[in-house]
Length: 510
Image 1: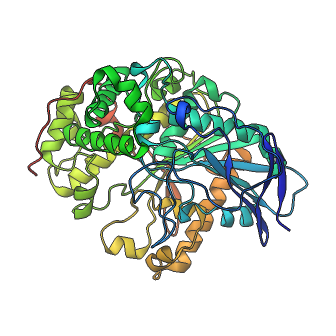
Image 2 (image 1 turned 135 degrees about the vertical axis):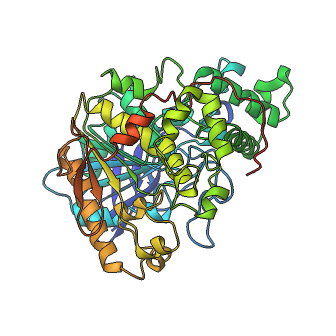
Image 3 (image 1 turned 60 degrees about the horizontal axis):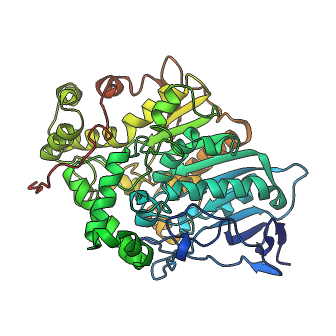
């Protein structure tokens, strides 16, 4: 029998798949269409009868390759995307289950909770938890601040969507067997960056009790001046008349606004590497200040934090596709010079001294990975550990095939490892060493779920000895001071918020 649950807006009907119940595309806010475009999420109107929650709804607007459901199948994109999915054990436990709310990654401009690698069923079956996956507005509709063009337009829409989803979970998850007093907010990449924003935002106080951040870009936020410049560039890309900009934004096709924002993002990344142009803005109210500063000052929510990065976020040195595809990082000496010139020129010599083989490809890859991922992650761990239990890890494990082709433990390969999914594409990558892959997946899953249950993953917290858990096959182990020399080199780097405006355009000749 298909499971039905009463929520605050009405009954939702899901599907029973053996020992788990699954509800898809439950609306947590009203569709942000028409007059609600560029507005904070509004309450869901109540419905009568049972809402059909058996199929995925829409993904948020992005590029065409953003929402694959398989090799030849794609999730449709629409502004009506403010939905979430719930997966719970079919047999209710005597006590409420821990809840994990997953925020998907994708650089704040792509992705969806419906990706096959986000399949929650293995976690729910093995560990008896409730897993929630959320969608939120992306790119030009969610992470460009157009508030300067109308008093009706609001900032940080994608973050506001996530907060609305967390509030919905807090109010409704008990009906699905989840424990509203044990909610872990969990994300990867941009989703992990959002988790760190939620630690720092007044609006999320009390909405979660633990936090997991996998490979965050912890300082991926914009100053008001930077955000305003991004908005102006988007308006120019839309060829809007300044006198009618607000009307153009209200009436332009969503795909046009999305495309314009991605164009601006790619151009800005060429100009100043290691910045995320489409990102939350420090608006002084909803996001009062840089999250890392909030955490360091002890003003963030003092909940246990599990945070870490991959050993080879950008692949092994010399892996050509990284240099061609990941155009946001400083992968050539010219781009390194450009990054420091725009952010912190005085830091360049000190930082480069940490990479004695610079400018070899290996050194450039390490520098780019450290700057974009590891440096801000360690900064957050150092700061949060002063106020709440903090657990830092580095995930070194990679299937043999990924090592052989020069990728290693690359960005996002932790996602299927934690979810435990076995999609055909992953099975091909783990054809060699599948037994060890499953062992590592089970080990990581147990630690993550233990953290969600108790607030500790089973290893000592990060403290004065800077102990980091290195997760590798066959022996995950603590390494004191793993990032110490890197952190000393980068500790005082000003970061991507240093320069308020973009420099003149450059041509990358490397």
